[in-house]
Amino acid sequence: MIRRELDLTESPNPLKISVGGKEEYIFSYYGDGIVSQDIQFDLVKAGSEVKVLGLILGLKDAKIDLNVQVNHLVPNTKCTVLVKAVLKDKSKLDFFGKLFVSKGAHGSDSFLDQRTLLLGDGAGVDSTPQLEILANNVKCSHKVSMSKPSVDEIFYMSSRGLFRDNAVELISKGFLAYE
Image (cartoon, rainbow, N blue to C red; front, top):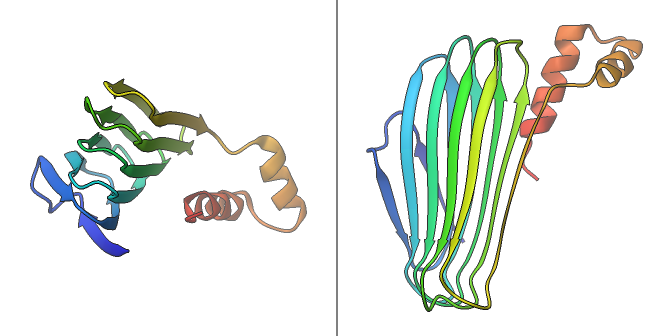
């Protein structure tokens, strides 16, 4: 499998990528600025597969606008999209993810997963997953989750000698760890 890294702050917008084999893309953003990026993956060859991993750490009053779309244009293609975000302070993420299966792209298998850990009282996420399926015999799904560290998690770690800030940092690192 070919692995490529994308920089959200330096990539052209919109970013369009044609996938004709087995490829993996990793993108990340870390900071407190304003970033907007549209990324489109077109699966153009039968049997092609793409795995996409996005890691985001929003600080202070970061504004992150991210649109990810995967287009299954031919039969028997596969994709997995996982975007994880840790939002601190007053940072905001506006995420739109779309899985599109064109007419005739039977046998497509697609999954979109967006997870957010909120670490600030003003932090927030607006996540919109979407499926558009024009073919039969496909497997497509999506999942979105957002949460804050629980009081029980913090208490447990504090009872083991960690200060609250260290416990939150450890929870964040564990959350971002690739599965």
